[in-house]
Image 1 (cartoon, one colour):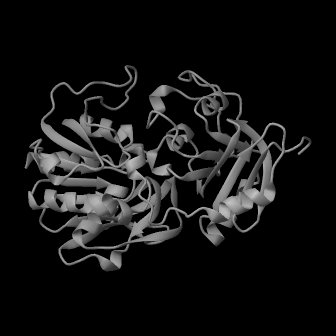
Image 2 (tube, helix red, strand yellow; image 1 turned 90 degrees about the vertical axis):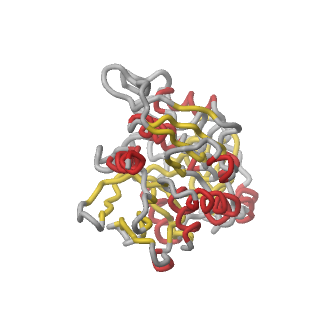
Image 3 (cartoon, rainbow, N blue to C red; image 1 turned 135 degrees about the vertical axis):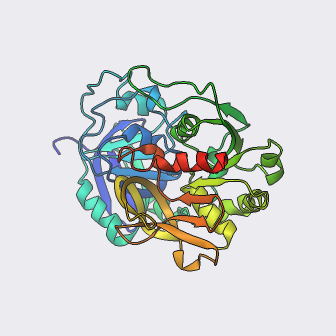
Length: 378
């Protein structure tokens, strides 16, 4: 570097990374993870599942397509900050409405460039997701000892219920369908099924995929009870993705899920919804070393033998060894063999760990929404 550092990343073990700040000045304390996706930085930053985390991007060209409101998965960025190798490049894309730096600044999120992200990624892989303090000061003044101490004092995500922080405040209806050239987003005007989606931090494109599959979607807050869900007389229930420890959120979500299961209607879960469905069925979840975050994760469907290229974002996983009788493992990660899907034997109840709506395949996993719709047809 030929200039004074204006950003600093302090790890709880005392390791310090310096760089150039962009976005909003300030500091934040969080868990650090890395994401290997080559595109979709805006979707990643606005994914509610990243609550309580700072994201290191292994792909160096971040900011090159700018940002557009159409790509937001939530109204605001949820990830606490971003770490990149190079400063955001000059944006060039016909859909962009704003550059990344301005977007981050207006939404009070910190960015840090000029970092050896390969070294940082190796540290995360070898030591597990560290607790960090990220600071940006245009004058380059940092109290390093204080930042390290703040990182050490961070309690972490284990045992933390974050779904209540990102869920909707009240119920709402959704009928917007997936983006398609040349018209953009569409509207579902002839739905076949009534679906209740429980919002633990739902990505907007999941709701679009449900609408595109023929669903009239009503979204309920994470704290909804089984009585709240069933009062809407749904044909099926969807359990969304979200942040935090599934066991913590499960304290109130598992009783709801059990009540829905007793009603014997189709249930489909993604990510955190997958983990909490597993908890409701009697399995356990565990914290991973550094989690799965990226858009290039191969997952094998054990029933068909096919391999799907998937998008993932999770730091906890279902312990397949604890799955009870009557619950089958349907998908596994080809990276580490961890569980990526389950189903109830003989019942239309299933879930996956990965994100089929993110479409990195691009259409490898869309059949899951069609499977859910077919279950409601039946």
